[in-house]
Length: 111
Image (cartoon, rainbow, N blue to C red; front, side, top):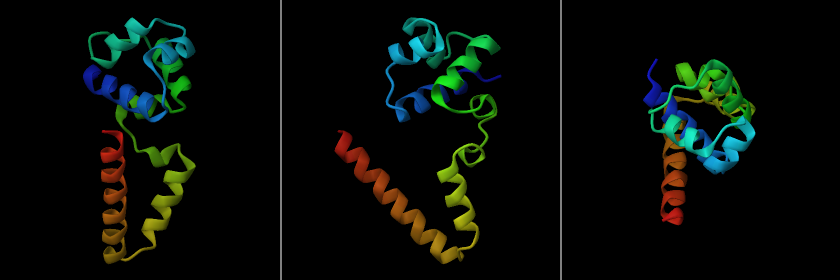
């Protein structure tokens, strides 16, 4: 298993959920130092601990371990995915540009 990649996924999902390491640690019944070590790839959580972290973040372990797409567990992502299946390649490109523009705007706002 790629523990550094799992740690990056945990950190990314934690930030997406607007949780601090301390808050995630409380939900997962561990310490914020341990969460930090996991996110940096310096610690390998047990399956039980990883399960608690995933439950706290509202995502399945398969996402953290295998990187399976968000559409598998998020209703909004699944809806968008099914919607894109009905679009022409041109429309998918337009939608991509819109999404990239929104993401770029959020990055500017956060800095």
